[in-house]
Length: 363
Image (tube, rainbow, N blue to C red; front, side, top):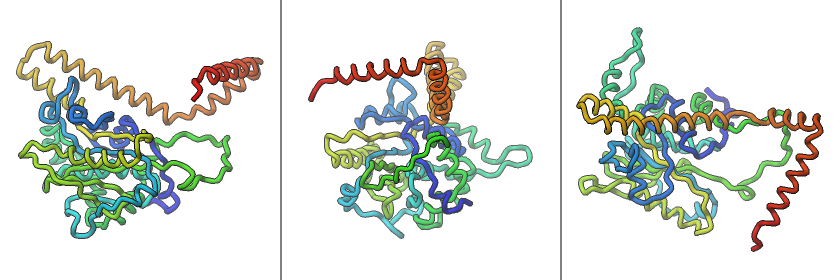
């Protein structure tokens, strides 16, 4: 277990699909990834599940498990939110919701809200002495099914009967989750001492993540905000009439954005979808078994190569995020000073900076 001081030591992490995908894979989750959305229109929401060239959930065969929205949190706007948070027996028994009890944990809690509300109903059993279990065959036959892995399965089973606040405490006390979350902390240096007092809520900007998920059993859509007392029911959808659950979530997101006015642009929206590599691998295998034309297979292999390159780029970016460049910068400055070039380069940089300032249009 984690001590109280360690529980509160959660860093802020960047809202980025490569960061979030790497984070959930470190939990042991399989067959899922995050993708960034730049628009709330129908085409964008449908195409985010595709593997290339468009297509929606029905066409591409990829699920949209949930949406994760980042926005600037303000006391003024949140104080005007008069929507009812469900509590007690009003919360569906199979809807997972946890209160956020640890600062800076909202990103991971939003991710867990989507994952644990889409967890497979088949429990993941421990491996036997041969390294297999009864779920392996089923997993092979449903390679595109979201698998939350043993760690989250055990956590979910353990806290399922807890009230929302104790669920949040259990998540905050999980050393495995905290360490995975904090692995994306910005590197700091022992050579830098910042004696400034910490900013209070009124001085700096605070950002917050919330999740939007469908409850398929009831055909309802919920907003899951760990700072609220419970889930917020947003509305219903009917798949028999061709309704998409994200239409309900979209209205709630648009309403929240409109509360800030046209001057606020600091928002981020990501969708949790199926791993596009897995979908393409399954399609390539199926096409080859059916002996379809080479062009079709070649096109899918090209799309798969693009997805592999995207993962390589994500890994490269995450490695850079975790790397501490400060010692290199210090040694570079020392080297320039020793060779007598530091003063010259500093003066050149100062002149360049002044030139750019003078070229700026006056308002």
